[in-house]
Amino acid sequence: MDLSLSTRTVGDRTVVEVGGEIDVYTAPKLREQLVELVNDGSYHLVVDMEGVDFLDSTGLGVLVGGLKRVRAHEGSLRLVCNQERILKIFRITGLTKVFPIHTSVDDAVTATD
Amino acid sequence: MTEGDGMATVELRFSALPEHVRTARLVAAAVARRAGVDEAVLDEVRLAVGEACSRAVGLHISNGVTAPVRVSLTEDEKKFSIEVGDEAPRAVTGHTAEGDAATADALSGDDAGAETDDEMGLAVISGLVDDVEVTSDETGGVIRMSWPTATASAVS
Image (cartoon, rainbow over all chains, first blue to last red; front, side, top):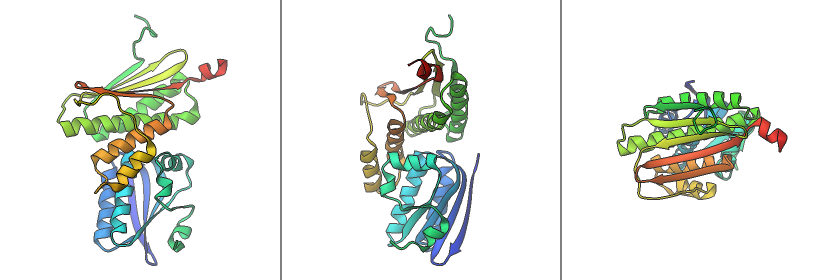
């Protein structure tokens, strides 16, 4: 039920691996993690959502907040997601136009466009 | 009174705290499954009821409302209905959200605060659920949603 978070560095990118459920209760933990990374100078983030079982609009709000923070430092926030039920939420809110969504972490850490 | 006379199949009242929203999602999905809602749609039911409850919890907290959030799950012959009610007073009547508009608002704001979460929540609900009605008045608001049950889609 809980949210799991782990981070690692790949080149100039920081990969945040998220697992579990991102909802109104757990989203603040993800927000804290993203804020902490940006405050520590990590401006190129890859959020790996492959282990996410559930995502709601509170989670979307946190990701949008993270994107705004890294953009303030000319950074980037890329997502890794292949799960149709999660992708659908990005689509219906129009956020597929806002986030680069990749099919693998390898793809996300090497992407430059 | 028998089932079908307008009485909810299952009713839930929970303190307006974020940690209870997951419970509401689990209960709604379990009752929807039993009512014959298609397995493929259960994820949508779970997400939509979670969004509605998150919104209600947020409204209660931000307005200092101590009353519980109400969820009623009703099964009838053709459809499965969910009503999520809050008691946060507001002046507006009737409100609908468009996905793109909510997204644009979320991105133009200073931070992803409660208000943008609220609009994005409504955007998700209206994007997911075909039959949805959002109303509010000075005594609170109600989100009504329904899904066809398997027996209904089989005969139609």
